[in-house]
Length: 280
Image (cartoon, rainbow, N blue to C red; front, side, top):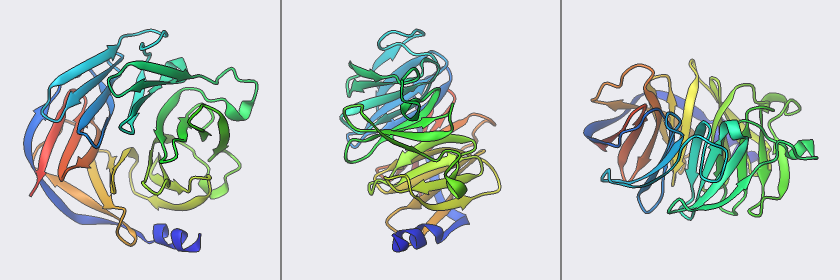
């Protein structure tokens, strides 16, 4: 435990980062909120402007889309986040207080809805984000109660953490979560990134001068956005060093939604499209 703690507390934010050159843009969205990419190169985008989930490949071809406003199966009311582990797709259906699960082709599988649960510890409302571990456990960012709620792969409640009793690791304004391949839980919370182990124990904290808005981990590449800035870190390296990413393309103010690195390319989600960059 102590070695992990020291590893994550040895972090830095560098102004001297990597350069990426613009290649192309793909997609056309109304008001994208989040995206994820699988090892097979499938891209899923949540579009809160149209209440849809859109499936694309890395060449920009739209393979399928589902949704529209509603509360039935495969309908959404403000889908704030989408996550895929390659086998299933999980959508944080914010105003419907649920997580909807689909197969990789966006066929409906199930929903998890616990707002009216008899056990208040298992209840979540207005979910902002979710992700699964390598064991299949589902972690949900419960914005109503400002905590993480954890379920097993069958939807059984396990625990919650990060609430008012978490001390230095109490969540105040959480926005998004991501899990590493070692099942550490990263949570953006205002100007901090809080790091927990899979059992909800605090491991470390990253502090910045401005608010973090998104976080994505693909393989060992962690990418976070803060305002109009993008940072990345290689989780295989000793210490958590966030390096600034330089791009040769101007992004309109308030348009940046998220970013990730896949196959040595930088993918940036903006309000209406995905920008793809090559490492210089």
